[in-house]
Image (cartoon, rainbow, N blue to C red):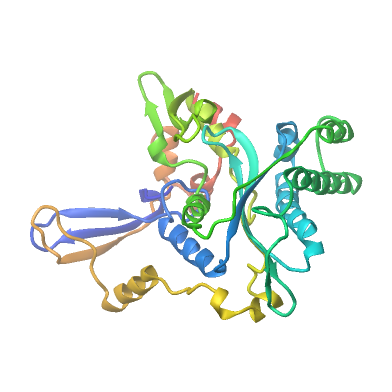
Length: 375
């Protein structure tokens, strides 16, 4: 529906030459691949305001692939458990040091090739503040805790959470959950951490890239109508050489398989994929009493220009034919039968009912429904 007649928009008619320009509204959906770029930039601005002027560690928490099926079947419960367990792991490894760290976490369910790969990217302060606001650094050099300890604690919290949910009857799965838990408890889990750094610009941009957007951008997808194939461009990390960027590779999919690959990464309704803990929460007492020299300046150039643009009501449109800045605007009402006509490739009903057409336009089809529809 995004940027199509289904949502309506405006027609800009040039007063100089009469050329018309159609601008359709964006859907604003949190998994859309086309819109909300400004929201991503604003989110990164807010993140910059949360971060402190201290070294940060980029840590990635990854679940074993044996748990993929269980997570697919219980997304809302287990995604929340995963993000909560990441913070509980950090609190446990730092509680003996007597300080509270800060952490921002973003959930990813995908790899570059769109496979189901559940992991959480986090930015964690290298150290923390005590109750008086004094800053303390860890006693371990370049890390919060050893690799083995971080992995063991993370595994413990996830498996304890799964057992608790299972005993309460909240999990559904087609095989024995007890056997699955026993199996993954014997393997080593992966918690990867980088060295502390003051320059978090790159990782901030990476975290913001998939905020208010799904797992892939249209620039990486190409549909070949004659072959009826979808080509997906991705980073081939398996063949990456040390110190070099990952080479590009192409994954060939059938159209319905490509739809399924994208739809499996749609998060549950109202699920918050980015969360802030400890010193990154504005209501935390330790954050309020730490030195102001550790706080970032939240004002940004982008925010200033947005305010100026709104106050001056600058017209962003220029006619490509005559260069005129003068336009007449005309509102386009939503075309509720647009998607009905396009998807089903047939003429709309003679007397469409608004409710039925809205339902058709906003319905998210499952994999099997898409297959039946296209057939």
